[in-house]
Length: 139
Image (cartoon, rainbow, N blue to C red):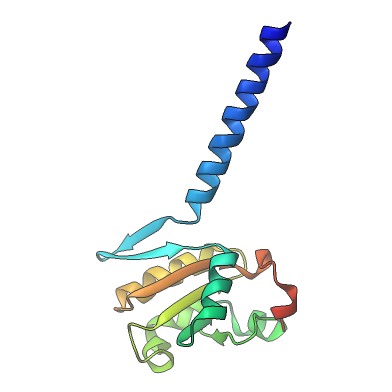
C-alpha cells in the first residue's frame, strides 16, 4: 500500500511540475514572421511594460463597436481589418514597443503578424481583454 501511495504522489508531482514548466514557457513563445520575432506575453508582463515604460502603444485590434463598449485605459483603436491601411499613420516609429490585444487572443496574434510584415520590430501579443486581470484599468 505504501508503494502505491508513493507512486501516486510521484505521478501527481511529475504532472504538476510539467504543468508549471510548460505553463510558464507558453507565455514566452516567440513567433517569427519575416525573420522578426514577436512574443506572446502574460498580462503581468504587459502590466510591467505599461508601468515601467514611457514610449509604447497599447493597441486594441477589435472592431470600433467593441472598442467603444470597453477598453484598457490608454488603448488606441486600430481594427484588425484596417492595419495595413492605417498602421503607419497611427504608429510612425517602427521601433516603438507595441502591446496588442483583442477580445480572446486570436485577432491579436494575426495583428502582430501583420505589423511585423509592415516592418514593426517590437511587437508583443498580450492576448485578450477577456482575460485581463486588472478590472480597474478597463474603461
